[in-house]
Image (cartoon, rainbow, N blue to C red):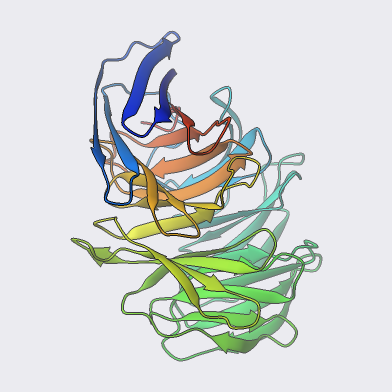
Length: 377
């Protein structure tokens, strides 16, 4: 495999230095890269990096990869159109185990972090539970939806699972028995993502009806509905302390294409918006506080860019532009300094990028490590 490191250092507002190095194993690659910068009115400098990799890698998947989630600080799990979930060591580039059982594309992955267990949802209307320490057969199966499963989240104590679908329903499951405990349905509620609030009974949900809902898992009732947005809400995540959440939207040519920060505590009002992408924003996450001296959010988009935002002001701190890639569809925190990003490219290139962010102070130093991994055909 090939490791491309790009170090960005910003000691002074107008001085940015970049250094590229490629570390290659047995495979040989050709790279084209370029950088440019521009100053924003708010004083920040955006550094854009374009890379092109002309190399086919040994496959972990044999078709487009759609989703990735972190299992622990070394392992991630990915899924896609080849109907296979793959446990993958993103540090070494090695496939750990493959899990087969779905009959159609895998749409969502939810991991019980720092354990050996995870869940996968699929277009086959099924959800399956897997264990890295046991066989490659599903440990538990959850069947109850009538259309593709598009939302998947596990409770903080790992005893319950909530799933959502384009059939307008949410189902709450007992993980131990595999039985459905609660069912709720809302008209036109085509679920796009689910996220359980840490240390709470609440579940956050986004929908194609442009609505963000907060559900109480005790009875599976809608506890709060946020103001209807202008565009389809594609993804959501809750901060580690459970006080805030971020959602993102579809869009085209800069219309829509934003992420929005919300208060989850008392006012449940909009706090800040993050605008700058030009196509659908597919994923949005809170960056680990160990990394940043300021609260920060990362977004990935179909415009082939990952952006880092100042959570409080909405200013774009950095833009990573992967020139020649496909839509960046899934973003996940791997460890305290690493992000995983899926490039849903053409069938010839299916990459998992690892973005490493290291800083002595958040404003002055960044280090990006792009790893076009063995997710290729």
